[in-house]
Amino acid sequence: MANEVVVVAGTRPELIKLAPVFKWLEVRGVDYVFVWSGQHYDYELSRVFIEELNIPEPQYDLGVGSGSHSVQTAKAMMGLEKVLDERKPRAVVAVGDTNTVVASALASSKKNIPFLHIESGLRSWDKTMPEELNRIVADHLGFTLFAPSKLAYINLLAEGIPSNRIVLSGNTVVDVLLENVGLAREISDRVLSSIGVEEREYILVTVHRQENTDNPRRLIGIFNALNRLVEDYGYKVVVPLHPRTRNRLIEYGLMDTVKEKLTITRPLGYLEFIALMEKCLVVLTDSGGVQEEAYTLRVPIVTLRYNTERIETVLYGLNVLAGADTNRIVEYTIKMIEYRDKIVGNVKGKPNPYGDGRAGERIASWIKDNLDELTISDVDLTDEPIVSYKLVREVVENHKLLDKLIGFNADGVPVLENPMELVVRVSLRWPKPWENLDS
Ligand code: UD1
Ligand code: UDP
Image 1 (cartoon, helix red, strand yellow):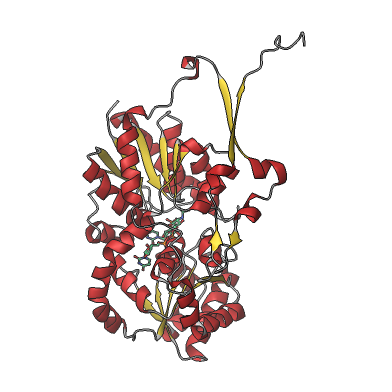
Image 2 (cartoon, rainbow, N blue to C red):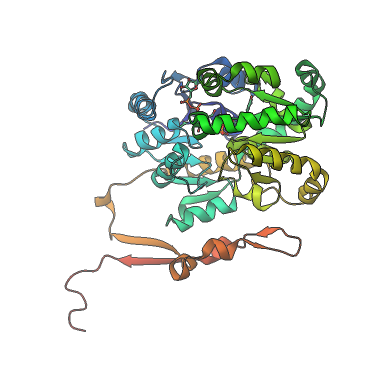
């Protein structure tokens, strides 16, 4: 077995969120092999981030490409299995909830290679979302789970995952943002003028999620709202278009109108995108990463979904869920703009629920410190088989854990107090049928 970890990625957000992990694996001197699944392949969704964020070149490219969920997952598993057979790593590391991630969790766990899941424990409680299914599987197969927030940590405990398998690391999205926001500011004048917008006079939009793009009613609902924000209110609306959304707009015959009214761009590089986000009035998005980044920059968010797994952004008062309903999107966007100063002022002093920008360091340090012990042992090597349950007392007693934990202090700040204290450990020896017969 090689004393190295295999790090897998395959899409835009995985590259961005892994940048700090690669950096800190190098600093801590952990050997790694970088495997690119190839789920994303356009330059703007892949290579641009490798170049911009100094991410190392992948040593393997599995060439997965586009396809149905099963095809993508199966291809990634088959490709990764070969790499795992060749490299025999100590562990496999991946971040997030894409098909590449669930494939990594399955391929590694089935070979008894520990799977280390970064950004673990997010839940939208919506199983029609492909990402929710991927998260649940990846979290439950994970050997060690790096929770990006306290709420994510609690979600994992509430699903019966023992606390000794969870590390509260924070989200690496904060690290990469804090490290690069200065560079983004340096280019922001150029970016804004090349797109033809002025600071705080435009709305930034990203839409790419399957539930929105592949449902014409929803996509039309969203783009009708964007058109109205331009026509009725005179705002400029900037939409860096994901290829999935571009394809659907063409298919549904909407592209001409959209191009006429909105400011459509190619998918942007990270620095360009952050520069635009920091200077916009409000961001409208169905992206997970964009909600986290907007919170970190304290930019108001209208989420183009009916739920979110970035629940903290709503609880802390910077995000509102508008779904794909035209009237609601317009109304909420206008309200966010009208009350912008107060809304932003209200969250300025609040802590960032996604961490302090040191998540990558924590994750890499944990891997370094535990690398030698990362093994899934054969059950027949266990002396005394023990069934261990980590039970969350409140869940067991009254199923109201989250209600109880999400309180608000006098300043209206949600408080999640010492989740660890609510955990009780119950260890059960397997009972033998002949024991206690006499009593
Ligand atoms: C995937 C992830 C999603 C993540 C998003 C990040 C899954 C289930 N979904 O969604 O969680 O938020 O990446 O952006 O893993 N396409 C191109 N060029 C590319 C890649 C895709 O044109 O380089 C087009 C293809 O038509 C493809 C479609 O986009 O069929 C969807 O791509 P896919 O990777 O399946 O899903 P995303 O929507 O990108
Ligand atoms: N992003 C980018 N250029 C764009 C749009 C988004 O660099 O034109 C970045 C954004 O800053 C965030 C990430 O892409 O870090 C989010 O990716 P995406 O929305 O595709 O996926 P999700 O986060 O929803 O999984």
